[in-house]
Figure 1 (cartoon, one colour):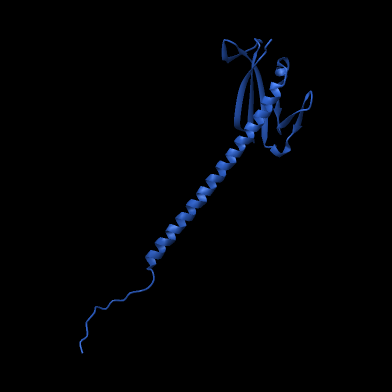
Figure 2 (figure 1 turned 45 degrees about the horizontal axis):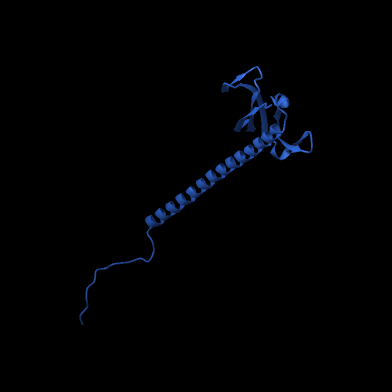
Length: 154
């Protein structure tokens, strides 16, 4: 009887401890990366929501000042609305309704006379041009600001 000699080899059907540890480390890194990515997405989403809200609140003031007579615009200077207000045009005059759901936000309005020769310079006399600036803050942190010019047209 002929027998072939084979080397003693033992094969296991599973993974080595080192392979299991390496796979566990890779899975842990993937889960950590997903958690960090999810957190960053949540922060960016919240910042985008705050910016959208701020732009909405600026547009509220832009509409209100557009409907205000030029001679009455200076009365808006220095107004701070906390919580912000929803400007409602009910015939006349403009009415304001507080928006308590946005109590962390504030609207600040600044109205300044500007120099017709250089629109970046403010001045103390009325040359029939004003700059209206609305700034929006949330918890006293600036979110957005916008300015526009109104003219006293004859």
